[in-house]
Image 1 (cartoon, rainbow over the protein chains, first blue to last red):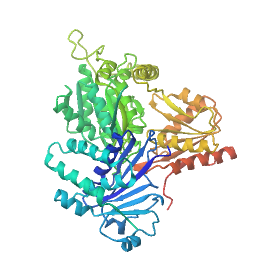
Image 2 (cartoon, each protein chain N blue to C red; image 1 turned 90 degrees about the horizontal axis):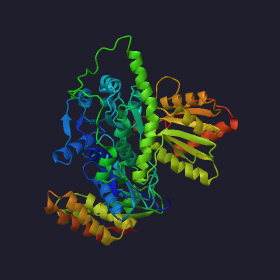
Image 3 (cartoon, rainbow over the protein chains, first blue to last red; image 1 turned 120 degrees about the vertical axis):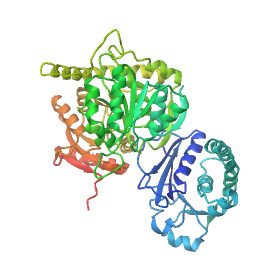
Image 4 (tube, each protein chain N blue to C red; image 1 turned 45 degrees about the vertical axis):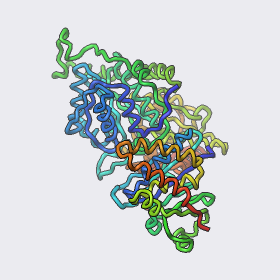
Length: 193
Length: 394
C-alpha cells in the first residue's frame, strides 16, 4: 500500500486534463500497475475549472474518494493559480508541475509558500511547435511522468506510441506531432530553484 | 486466467452485456448510466452482438419493451439511473409481478430534486419493495461479475424475478480501474441459453400474461413473488459457487472484512466499502478491533445471516447513502436493526446518512464513525441513533 502515488490535475474544461489523467492511468497500467483515473464531475463547460485524479500502486486500490493529500499536482492552466488553491494538501516531499512561463518570484507568491519542488514547462510553446495548435495535455502528461518517475522514459514513449495509434486511429496525421510533443516536453520540464 | 484490462464501471457493465449477448436491449440515456447503452449500441452496430437494440423515447418505454420481450420468451436487458428508474416506476412492478427475469444495470444517482446528477442510493432504495432482486457492487469488477451471474439467478425456475445490479454513479461508473475479464466463450457457457417454461410465442401453449387478477388471486400471486424472493437467496449462493469455480472470485450474500474478531463495525454498500477497508486496516494497526460488513445482496435481504454475523459486536454503524426522510434512519439501517432485534442481538446500533448527492466520503469521515462507535461502546448506550456523516454544519 505504501508505494501508492496520488496525483491531482487542475485544468479548465476543454484542455484535456481528464484525458491526460486517463492516458496516464493507461500508461501506468501497461507497466503492470494498479490504477485509478477519474475526473471530478461538476457543472462542466468549456473554460470552467476541472479536477481529475490518478492513483497508481503496485497493489490493488480500494479507496474510493477524491484525493486531498496528493503526492503530485499538475496545473494545466496557470490562470488557475489565482483562483484555485492548487497546493491544498500537497505533500511537501512531493512536487507541483505547472504549465507556465512565470519565473520563481511570481510563482512563490502564487503558491502561498509551498515548500516542495516546483517544476514548470511552457506547454504552449511545446504544443505550438509540435502540433501547431494549443493542446497542453500531451506535454503535461510527459512532464508529470518525468517528474514523478512513474515509469522510465523509454517505456513511456513506446507506450504512448501505441496509445496514440489507438486514440487517433481516424486521424493518424496527428500522431507524429503528439510524439514530438512528448519528447520535447520530457526535455523542457525544469525544476524552479 | 482471465484477461487483465482497465475499464470504467460503465465500460465493465457494457462489456458484460456484450458477452451475455441478450436478445433485446431497450434503453434511454440518462447520466451517469448513459455510456452503457452508448457502448452497447456500438457493439450492435459493429456486429459484435446480435441483440435487437430498441432506442426508445423514454424509460417507461424502455421497461415496457423489456417486459414485452421477456414475455415473448426473449432475454432482455436495460440500464438506467435515478429519474430514469423513477419514470419506469409503473413498469418495474409489472415486470416483477409478471415474473419476468429482466436484468438491469442501475448506476446509482440521486433522485431529483433539486436536480443532481451525482451518486447516492435514493434510486435503488425507492425500488427496494418492488420485487426486484438488488445486488450492489463495490467496484467495476463486481459490477461486471454481478452482471455475468445475473441471468442465472433471475431465470432460475424457482426464482423468475427481475434483477438489478447496482454500482455507484461516477465513483465507479466513470473511474478507470483494473479489472479481470472472463473469456467470451466461458461467459457464454456460464450464462447459457434462456429457455423459459412459459412464453407468449409458444404456439403449443397459448397463454395470457398480465390479465385482471381479482380478490381471489392477487394475494397468492404476491405470496408467490415473496417465496421466489426467499428462494433467490440459495440460488444466488449456488450461482456464486459456480462462478468461483470459473474465476476464483468468491461472492456471498455479503462480504465480511475482518469482522470475525471485531468489536465495532460498519455496515455499508457499494464503493464506500473499499474506503472502509482501508480505514479498518489502519485501525487494526493501532490495535483497534474494527470490521466491515458489506451488503452485496440487498434484496432478498439476508436478515438472519446479517444478524448472526453482527451479533458478537459491541457497536455497529449502518451507513445509508439515501435518507428515507422518515425521521427514523435509512432503509439499510431499518433492515439491519430489525434483523438484529428478531435475532435478539444485544448490539448498540446507529444510523448514518451520508454521501447524499455525490458528497465525497473520505477515509477521515469513516474513521470518525469508528471513533463514535468506540465512544458508544464505552458509554454502553446510544444517545442519538439517527446521525449524519459529512453534512456541513453551517
